[in-house]
Image 1 (cartoon, rainbow, N blue to C red):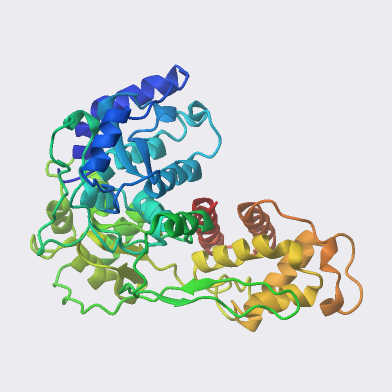
Image 2: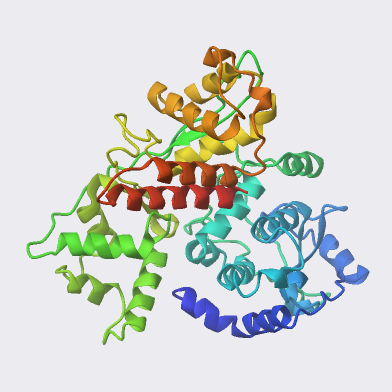
Length: 469
């Protein structure tokens, strides 16, 4: 299996069954666990969780329906596997994060692409662990964020059983990922998850004796974490700032149409964070849709003047330079175009004075909404923001919020404004939409260039917030 198209072909029947289930608004079937004989046999063999490798014992495990019944999965042995409750719980958290309000047929067909990716991840995460991380990185990152806070599993399964249809009582552990060779890399779990390890999972860890790897996992990310609480409110918040990796660049060959290549890649990935495989898949789909004679990254590169052997990632590095962010390596590699600095939009000078990176502004708005009920005065909010942004950007953001959230005319010294009267915001994405609309009204760029970037900026802000929510 090489790409997402192969995965769709392999699990074609599962996808068709899910479509039929959602389209006909069928009722979720009743689920059932393994029978006592099979469970007792697993425990007698000291079986381990196939996902994280901890031993199954007592009540620290249950039966997982690999494709959830609520999205068209079947209550059959082929769709069942025994795993620890923490991994089971984390998989369920992923589904709740993506599709929070059942029944799921109300998300169909508008969100079928997201549903399809989730179903494929459910299958691949059992059958092809490394490909689950490689082909569907955003969902895998979300799972690892819930499960371990983004860290790699410290141990690997070596005594696990696979799908329930593949073994019977008396068989030896048969999971295909048992006893990985020493020279084989562990399962890819490099993530960019914004989801912290939940209290519930830490509680499960304590009960069932699982200790996540506490070592610092190597990363190309610089972060500011655990900012000291504000004295007046006792609040705590975190933010992170990404930095581009300083990769050595290959010399750009003569005859390369750099501007056209940059435009093509930007159109393919926008400012999303994707793997090189995802970019390759999008290139292939674009070529098929436009009727190209040859498909794949090599003919794509040749079309812009690169040699066959130059390589897609090398071409991106060479053309984008320090405007590209690349994290990880191999199958874990993540690529994102850094949002450009636009005069009047995200610079220190005149204009809207937004943070440089849309993701950073998303974090600011998210933290505000989490803590909004604890603010008493304007000064509390101002001091809160000042630990995450420069003075200029803090003042600009405060002006935006005052105009949007405070009723009536503002009188008296600003720092003494009663913030308890501010309108409460249910979701950070709603606040982002309000600031977006406000910014569009204030934008006076006659040529429309800033309007274009402004829209792209807030599209990314809301995308990051929706992923978080």
